[in-house]
Length: 163
Image (cartoon, rainbow, N blue to C red; front, side):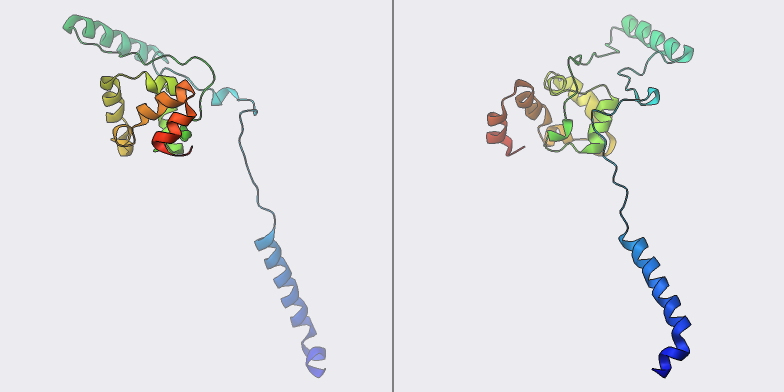
């Protein structure tokens, strides 16, 4: 009893420090979830083409188009156009959030776009994927996208496993 009478201020300070530390450790953390229902702000709009953002870009694009027609090379291989809302590209096995973001940056937002890519387009796209190079062929992403673009979930699951 004598111990508590002498050291009660130290015990109170220790108890308060413990309460503050436990609050900081166990307090509710911020949980941010983005959904499709959140309106996009102007700086968040996705642009499908990187050409024409300025005079220099337009000049470079025009010069490459002209040079391509002179030497007979296809300069701008057109990607299949997106029609409809974007698909969840992460459903494809081998495509994670980072690769999906790269594909969206390249203008690929739907399974049908991936399914319509020619082998040459896949090769050109694959060369620009950096750390993800070889992923399209190794994980057969074009074949997976073909099943999902057609809505053939049973065929997809029979060949690649569950979604």
